[in-house]
Length: 182
Image (cartoon, rainbow, N blue to C red; front, side, top):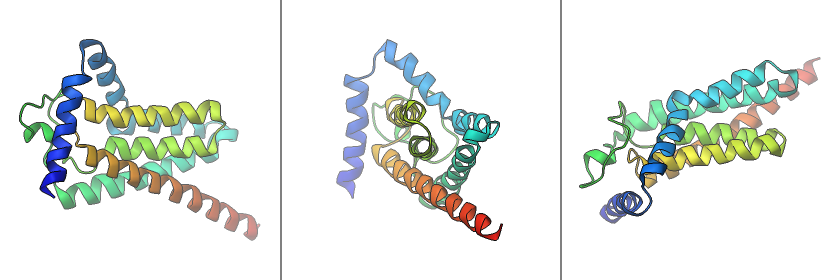
């Protein structure tokens, strides 16, 4: 397991050494902030609730976000209590300041991938593809700014994808049961 921890740290140091620059630093700080408290995804879900054509997707995104928060932020973060990489990896600089919770898994990634996948699967591609790309960018930004290990982001993405797919399935199951009753 030590090799994985070392690899995690080395990936972050590589990103810091070879990808970071003044221009990208500004962009990545903005991108990562879009995922703060799931803000952009909650906003999209609420907007979709106002329109009959997208209401179903707005509900699914909301369900996926709730699932991601429960599994990633409430259960796994508190179970594993992993220290943030900028506190452990020697030489790693955090670009956005101290974070208030544990590192594993990435909540930003979980919510971004959960919402992005629901939107990708359920909306027309002209909306779904940009949503998924934004979700991936927010996920990568967590590595770029130095607040998550790669394994935090990978597990956050897996949990987000599971939350998205379960939310779609659960919504459709409930909707079909309601149709049967009518």
